[in-house]
Length: 150
Ligand code: CA2
Image (cartoon, rainbow, N blue to C red; front, top):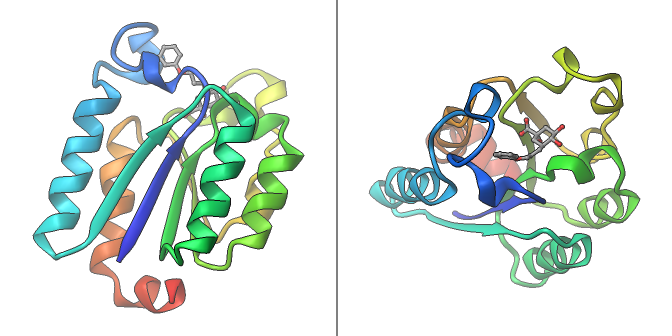
């Protein structure tokens, strides 16, 4: 499997600020862990992060062109605003997971709406930064999900 893990605005700050919400791990260490888990079973994980909505749309379109098997997306604040990311995800037919480090439903009401949820197969929230590696484990170890990704 080839998996893209796409991260939205400010996720590059992980491990530097607001550890009470987002933990102490950096995006680089999370990425290393996920790549290690996947590579043990011969799968590829590519981590990306952008503060720009259009770049995230480009990466989703790139996943369509390259026939990437699955996308894990933490669209961050764009979760709550972006019809463009919703539309791009709708056009992608591989397996899609919306991921959040925190549980947005326990936070401000503006975080309760997701434009992403109706375009994905699975939603994971509130597992902290461990959520990333748990989702990769699920994708690479559960044949049911791999078949759906084809
Ligand atoms: O819980 C999540 O993963 C979120 O997607 C994170 C977004 C937030 O807007 C969503 O409502 C929920 C914010 C990401 C900001 O990341 C930071 C990381 C470290 C320090 C400051 C911000």
